Length: 103
Image (tube, rainbow, N blue to C red):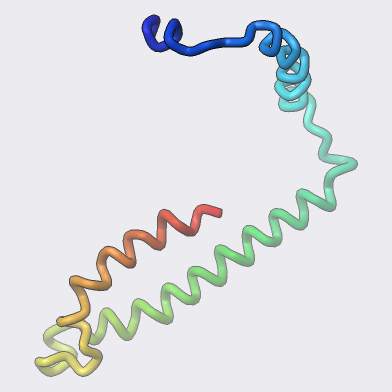
């Protein structure tokens, strides 16, 4: 850690200028203003809940046919929904969605 710190060029005058701005930023966390910003907070909460509900419904709508199609006791082989051949290619796509949806 010491070697990494010594290898970086630091402009200490600029650090001193930004220290007061940094303290103002941190002090805003200690005294949140919910009264004057309630409209923004309410809009953000509503947007977050809408995205949550929408993604849950879409996930359920997509998961039920894929799950039924992938079950060997529910769908004849080869699967009606072509889930068996597509499963290996869908897995990386499914895993990437959870990471890319962090807007």
